[in-house]
Amino acid sequence: MDNATVVASGTKIAQELGTTRSEVWRLVQQLRRSGVDIAGHSATGYRLRKVPDLLLAETLAPLLRGTIFASHIHHYFKIGSTNLAAMEAAAGGAPEGSVFVAEEQVAGRGRGAHGWLSARSQGIYCSVVLRPALSPADVLVLTLATGLAACAAVEQLLSPNPAGKKPATASQLDLRWPNDLLLNGKKFAGILAELTAEATRVRYVVVGMGINVNQPSFLAELRDLATSLRLETGNCWSRVELLAALLKSLDREYRALLKSGPGGRESVLRRFQERSSFAQGRRVRVEDDGGYEGVTAGLDARGFLQVETVNGLRTVLSGGVRGMD
Image (cartoon, rainbow, N blue to C red; front, side, top):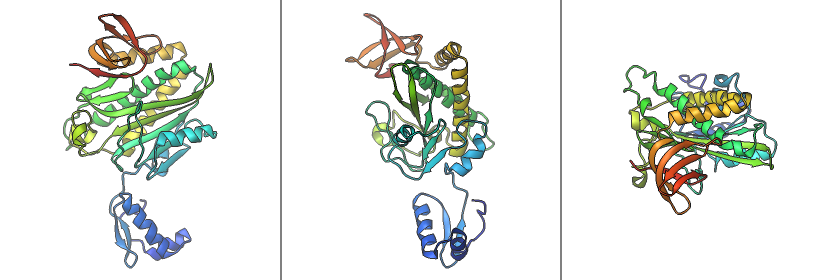
């Protein structure tokens, strides 16, 4: 990447790496299978046709200086689930701020029993380890704060509207309680928080974030439900730029939440309600406890969604929420 237009011989690369030319050839083939555009072969040398949009630690770390996420970034070309890797690492003592990011997941996970399609190098599949001084009951607020951070990062990416690109659609960005981001009414991002806790304190939380960035299409059964930034704007976007913005925004939200005590929690709840069309006055169907319908009536003090039904006010503790208009 430092010499993207230069042809480098297999012999020179082998010498610098302290390995053989045949091993260099094998590694180049592995990079090509992972989507890296490398021209040439062992006889003539290799050249990187363009700098790839890979979420490498070496690329991300300089962009994250000053945040808790700059020092422990783990990159995978293919993994089962970044959340699972992060949970295992956290159990083994991984420090707060550890980042696990993959080009592709083969067992990506969403909320409940849902999976998350993770096409190679087209989206962001990232999980972070946090060790907040919070009670287990406050982790929902952390999920909501992550949603606000993701909204801010996407708006930062779309709003400048670089020359030659179609008008941005950040105004159509929406938050659906508790963990979905929508663009023009379709889901393009989700958040999955998992924790290990004692009765009164959290030991660690893993917050997973999946964002559809440059997917050109979806399976027929998902087209009415899912979308990507590319599909909604007509443009391809830098995943490196978006992930850096996301982690910097999450760092700000996380620090503010911990530093401000009850005031920080109240700020998250207030801003989420202002940002989400689902929080207040929206007719919804809740897929929980047999399913029921009603009109949303804001968040309670813990961050749970309240829904006014024909049988009175109900608090949504779990289950998907879907708009009916």
